[in-house]
Amino acid sequence: MNGLDIWMRENPLTYVWLGSYAVAFLIFVIEIVLVRHKRKITLDQIRLLREAGEEE
Amino acid sequence: MAINWFKYSAPTTFYALAGKLIPWFAVAAALLMAVGLYIGFFVAPVDYQQGEFYRIIFIHVPASILSMFLYLVMAGYAALGLIFNTRLSAMMATAIAPTGALFAFISLWTGALWGKPMWGAWWVWDARLTSELILLFLYLGYMALHSSIDDPRRADRASALLAIVGSVNVPIIYFSVKWWNTLHQGSTIKFSGTSMHVAMQQAMFIMLVACWLYAIAVVLARVRSIILERERQTSWVNELPEVRA
Image 1 (tube, each protein chain N blue to C red):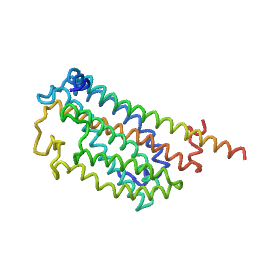
Image 2 (cartoon, each protein chain N blue to C red):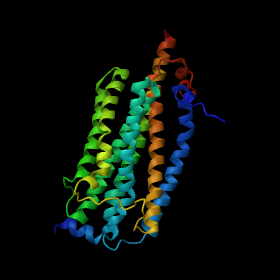
Image 3 (cartoon, chains in turn red, yellow):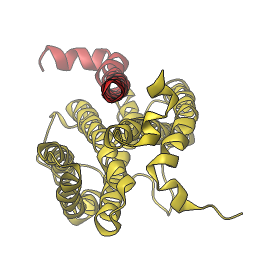
Image 4 (cartoon, rainbow over the protein chains, first blue to last red):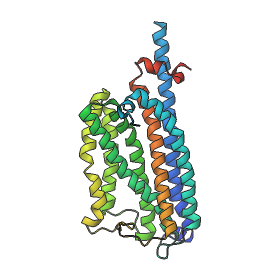
């Protein structure tokens, strides 16, 4: 048994929380941030196109 | 009162409808996730064989179910887009792929975390695990193929074929534990009943619904950006308050 095996058996709830749930929620947060960022840059692009069209 | 579904298949109407629905789905997902985790960690008892490690199932099982279900929904939308040439269907398929891929990754990741203390290995080339890994690659392949073609309509058609062909993998994942002698256990919850404690069932079911609602919220948010991107030359997009602001 190596160090990680011993640690996970001594701290199973910490292992489950940090390893599974913290990672899963971090992934959810990153996805939400990326979706919001994509919306922001898409709206910026459309505004730029619109302004360019109005100037012509 | 009959609902005019065709009305909501137009990006113009769907964009507004999605904007109204997202907060409801997002708030419901957050609340249910909190309730599910509370029951899963504070109410559900310790498993007599697996100890505390079994609590990984409250995220692992919903993630695995959603990774398969989202793939079928994505393939369904892709097929609708291919057959009827409906714009929104292809956009929906494109919006679902990243979320499905993330759920497939979470399923594999949490499965490995469970496998180490239970099986003594992070990974085994078991039929269930391998077919789930193939599902992740199918999602990644779908996204890579779609983004490699500049013309969106051609990209939709090419990636739709991959999505439809790849959907054969979903029943393989589901039935792999029955068809082959796998290390991964079969379904614990069956139509004939279950040996699971009721609190464990409740936590898993609530987390499944929460993940489902989260997926709907995030897919709707993503499809709104895709609609804006593809319809940016149209007058209705230029008249939107968020564009004029």
